[in-house]
Length: 199
Image (cartoon, rainbow, N blue to C red; front, side, top):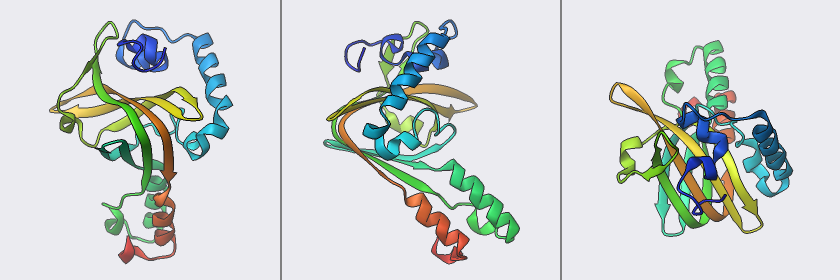
């Protein structure tokens, strides 16, 4: 099923269901079927293909902003953070890069659905009323729910520490189109070339 056709994660994003439901079993056949689907969409996904399929696990979302039909999600690329730490350690520049971010910007155009929800023990979704309570969450896993020439549907499981404990949330997006801007590469090159003051 697609987003809007059900209010249960087992129907919409079964690949992510076991993140939220202890009793849900992600079978090997379901996972293999999904992997075949995902890899068959490489051309349509373009650059986004390099980030989905759990390649952004533990990445922090710096910001999510929705304006009319436009949704912008900025993530901090963990791979570049780790490479930068290695270089900084070699050059004794750890202090200089402590707060440096390596942002990659995902822009979704023609937004048809955008929600962040809690997931009940039976898989039912309850949209949260205040998205600010989970600012700067971590990405855990993702699922490409659907894609064609003028639609993309994504499910992303988020983790956020709230108080002394953490909690999982489900982000759902339906859009007509998307773009990926890899600004983290330019930021990293500045570090490699010694332009620390420009970071």
